[in-house]
Amino acid sequence: MEKPLILHMLTTAKNLSPFDVNMALDAGWVTALPYINVEPSEVQGLVQDAIFSRSTKNLKRTGIFIGGRDPKQAMDMLKTARQSMVPPFEVSVFADPSGAFTTAAGMVAAVEYELKTKFNTDLKDVNVLALGGTGPVGQVASVIAAQAGANVRIIGRQLEKAQNIAELCNLEFGEGKINISAGSDADKAEFLKTTDVVFATGAAGIELLSAELLSAAPQLKVAADVNAVPPAGIAGINAFHSGVAIASSISGAVGIGALAIGNIKYQTQNSLLKKMLNSDKSLFLHFEHAFEIARETLQAS
Image (cartoon, rainbow, N blue to C red):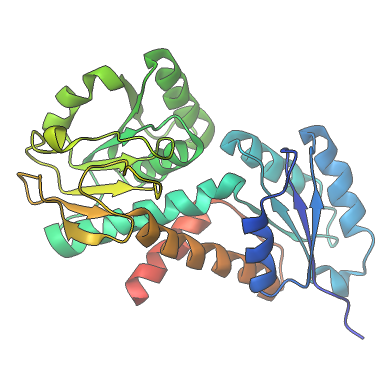
């Protein structure tokens, strides 16, 4: 008799995301067990309890998901989980804090797709402005874009916070091999003069880019907004837009809305959860793997 498929779901928050539970069960995991208020120091013990309770044959029917809200903390927990394996007792682990890894991957992949199909270019050397970029999705999207060769600037209301986040992204996520700078929200009109791509990743229901500012962005090509709650984060983009021309743009820029991004995010997370199920070897999945899948999803569409 085969053992049940069990996904142990760890989060540092007081609640596990129902979204992630639904995704796990819809991907084929039979049981999704929540572990809430997890301290990073507890990860090793939880992982080793999971791996030593089953035979090596049945371990591939066991997985670990890492949630929470902090991208760096999630990556640290993923690293700890990997170091806690005792070969041949190993299981797959997937980190996606607040869905930030798969959402950011979906957004950047969608932007890259529009750059290629509408402007015959890619992310290399384009100037990206990440509005509200100090949050989890903004951080990860900035890193993914920078890894693909873009020049990224994280914009926040507080310059010092934006600078600290940019430094964190460069050193902790980019291993010092990427270059992400920072800027203040008060200066975004000036930055828009040389911006090719805009990410709007701020809080829901807040307009980060007005029609007036859009009309003063002479080289803007693509603008992407992850906010599905009115008003839109970028004026003129609704949640369903997918490469639709932005009316106020003087440069022929196109917009990508939250539900278009969410569709790619959904497919990406589903694919990664299934990868864990179907792999004969342990996998350690995070935002880089999410971006690979998001790209493949768009290429196949």
